[in-house]
Image (cartoon, rainbow, N blue to C red; front, side, top):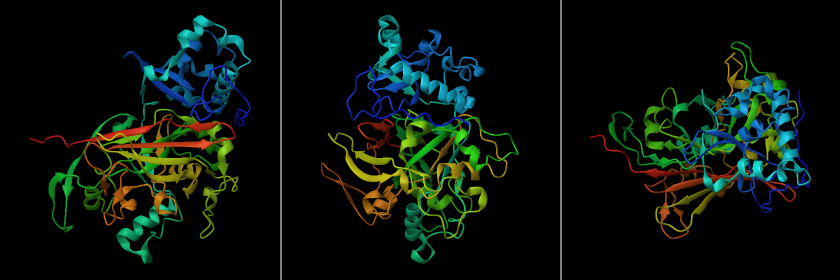
Length: 434
């Protein structure tokens, strides 16, 4: 299996960018963009620019990448699915080639003014699309702090964690059709509401919430009936995005018994459009939460128990309509996930369930141990018992119409930053049913 392609902290690009840029040469995330309402194209972010990979491929700059061309011309397609499906050998070849072409000492693209003008486009001029055709979407519940908080809110401290929670990554199958890229507005949903948990009325959600998450796109996947083993999992995880699993808490309260989330979650899920590869995040692997009481079953044991988590700082901003500034209402970290991305994938397929290139698997809400690290309004307001103050005045307990929720995140290296771009969405009023 290919080793991670780590670009040294000292490597510089001929593309200039600030030290706090989210997209230095050490990152090189993949996305799908369009220009002037043209056809979607695959690109890589570098500084304030997008590098058009179809243009580079047509210019022959990937001709030496044998593994990449086993899939034909994946960079000529409109989504990343084919490239994701080629696996780590192709991912490694492409990353090495891109790092070389963008290195400050490589003249190939740097000194070819005509090709550079065609291939390097300002990010401000493009519109980002979903990076893949998402065939299936699963959302987990992998943060112990979040699960505990929700358990305390609804069941009390003595029964906060359900008996199965420490044995397996709990999850539910979501709705792939309503996953949208950052910048997509969403309407407040209608649904059945119940005050007494015995009868219901049709109404507009009153307790709308965000959920601070990360998600990963799958690579080659597996055949039906053949589980992915822990040692194979790195070959099947292409990269990470930020995710907001919008939640209608009052609709969810009534409908989730006995089968879990349904319409309270299916009206929209927002993701950041740039997919940061696991190679770019490799320098930020750290010790994850201890899993000793109980110890997971053997199929869920990580091979490297000392580096199962990622040190990725996460932020949630809320900006009311008409406000000049957003208020950062949550600051968390991906390191708080109890169940790792690999464990999520391995458990998902233990039955023989087959995942396919471009499937999306969400982490579940990521909350830390401190109040300012809680990853949802449900926790921050403690189910409406507390008020969250806003920078320009006013308070929130849940999300109001006109509010924009913006999730950002990055891993901080020595002199460089690996970021994801925005994961932003605005809530519009509910549509009329008349």
